[in-house]
Image (tube, rainbow, N blue to C red; front, top):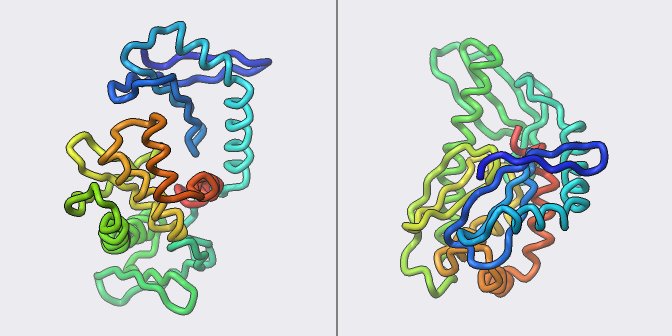
Length: 241
């Protein structure tokens, strides 16, 4: 169905409708951390079903969008200069930029700081070096946590293949063939938030939808998942920049 519009009061919100063949129950609505509104509809649902669901939850949608706007208003764009705050595993670190005497660049954690050494410390170079470091850390740490979390789930025969991809809307997803994709920015989050995302995606290996059975399974593995998800959502604007 593509991009549609919702009028509520004096505002007009755009939302994207996605047909989900794995969705067998009602229309589901998500407001992502970047403010985008996504509406998942079962294959058999028609346009009137979608509009009815949107109208019914219009007030909730506006509230969630307002929360996102407020968080984004306080999230300053990164300048990649010394003294700036960056996150790793839920902790804040001060960025320290040092000019390297060699042509090679390096990044390391040192005494509460993320130290980046580059031969030419301009913004683009520092950003690139730091992003590569986060992706390397994500491959190592998220891979190890995935193996640990998966080992405790009886329906998982072997640890799924992990792929890292920068995503604007999601922390992760699970493909129909069982491959798990994670946003490398997830390594900036606290461990309980990381484990929530991993648990969520691993539950999709058994329940390939967001229906009642899926959430029952998720709750059986992580009873406080709603609180952890809320915590992660509240940090999204700080972690995804």
